[in-house]
Length: 427
Image 1 (cartoon, rainbow, N blue to C red):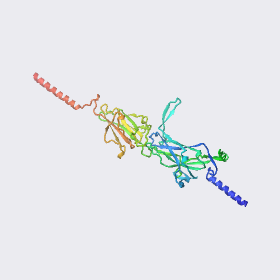
Image 2: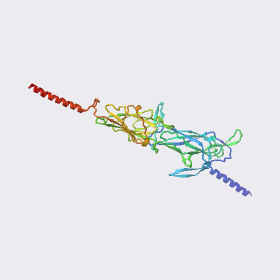
Image 3: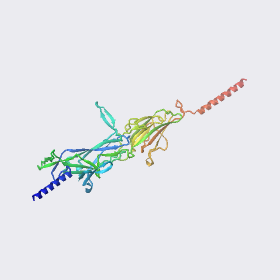
Image 4: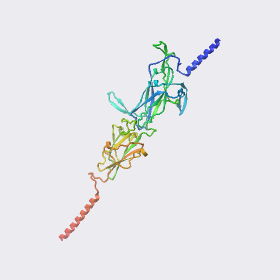
């Protein structure tokens, strides 16, 4: 009999040991518990990809954390996976039973948005502020991070809790938001002393000891299939055709056109006046100005600061990162001066109903505030200015030499006739 009891005790102990190993640090739900009062902080990476010429947007990305609304059979367990050498593989020993997080728990979880900006303000020792451009990496990627705060006292039992996580579509122009539904898995365990014993507190009402709960260090964000992620990526014109470049070129023509003369070109880029409802276009968005080889020529443009570029015949500059929700204004302050006829044409700017090309040469204005705005709707759009001058004198008065040559010839003929008559009269 004693032998059988010993065998039974051995089996029970073995089963308990196996259970504790399979659930890792998760303790028995039967133990009375009390959550720690602190907050678990974690970060989720944020990446924004561009075409390497587009400045970072002036915007903030946000996440929404909600109760896990999947069917019970779809959320009862999770097998975490990871991409290894291009192949998705299940991670050994990382399969867990899951408890769906509630709406009450989710509303107490706070998220700080991932902020992006084209410049950062830096102070020197004397307190002077200098705006420094935030540079992307060699792939044209900008990075930031979300911060998530999870109060530990929202949980009353150990386990793995799941919450739905989605990115808020703020409709910032040109950005492709991530519409994937992710899940956040929060591991809640018993707090333990160094010797492995539980940490207890005494309930002031019942005077009973309760094991203290805490959130484990591993809070995991994963796709619905269990694939772990470390960051959420958005596209800002790299793979999707949402940001565009515009090439502005000056041509000087005519037999009296000065090929060396520098013509000033004024340009401004502002949010479209009739923006689609809900679309956001920031006045603090900056646009790079480069030569045809990609070298920056001047400070970038934004809505509050237009730019003036000097171009001689055949020279060009390129504006990068323009979305179709910005109006572009271009003017030439010296248009129609010194005998020049100044016109412009827009070509290669979209096709079909979205095209914004000119059908003929139009007169360019002197002040960009009087210019007719247009939108850049495709890469490779061209704005060509033509300054033409024909037969111009130094005084700026246009002349045709033929009538004057005829007058001289007639005058010479009249003089010869007069002299012959005079000689005949004297004889």
